Image (tube, rainbow, N blue to C red; front, side, top):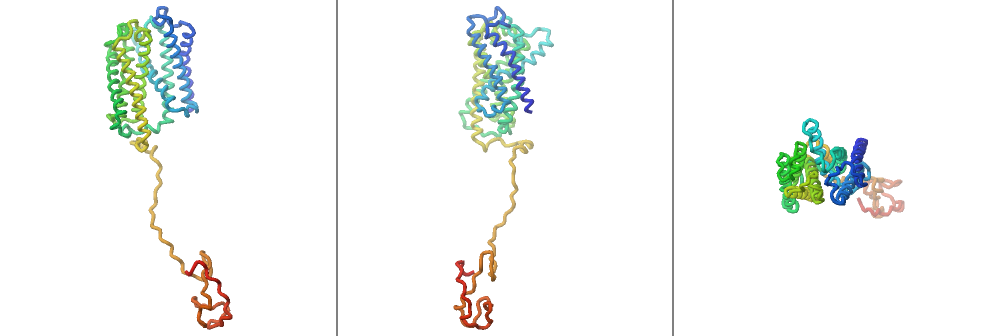
Length: 411
């Protein structure tokens, strides 16, 4: 498995090279792939320079993330500085990975030349988009494989079970209120993208609406799906609408859906503020509906992120409430080993052995009392005369001196 991950790491880095090379050319003053009448060349070029520098740093960060997911030092990185850029990268790359293959097939089997994935002629040359989106697709595929393996190895044990196994969220207004707002706003965003995917063009600038072919509608359908994925995750994890949904599935939907909402909503807003024309380079500019949609999209994605962070905090603070295995295969992997207990019987005190002559484990037995305390002619308590003495009477002068009494007392 180590070799496979290293191969995908190399693939992610190779996928970054075309995009990084193109950005370095543009930052160096080259205008390769930019038509002479492109709106990107309007003004003094400061905004274009800033956007190229920003996107160069963003793609260079993908190289560092790929290395962090396979190198040993990546295991020791704190969670937040590592997961936040991975979350944003997932949101930017996931729609491209889902749309570009379908758009390529549509372009191959359609008689009408597709404008999807390619900007208007006054924005960028067609080959630029093919290089850029192809590069992003390779990056997303490789980085996705590495991310899944990394998360499974480091935190996979925390996402076993189903949504119903999580601690209850009732009464936690700081969790349920933002989650409810995120669900409502994301649902509105999904509705607008669904209208665009149906080809209505409602609220879009006129130039982009006229180019809304099957490829672009497929892209809008992808954004609709990711918005609904975020809604499904919150309804399952916070409100328990789908309690039987697997926890891993719910977390995956929330991760991809929330990151896509925030990343692409923020990117489209940045392009609108940068005044580089409308969506994909249209000259009309961003409409009010688009401003509202992109703002709502980014807001819902940020709310999904904040809700997820608080939900994870509650989950980690309640270790006894962590998901229990609900299927036999999971139970075999996660059930703690048990040691059978044997029945116990009450202990009974040992019966003291009767005193015997000689020695015992407890030490020497007490000797008979001194013969001076016995009447003349009587025998000791053991019934035996002293060694060398007759059995009937003996003079006290012949009795050997008795040993002093033992400190143990009489038995």
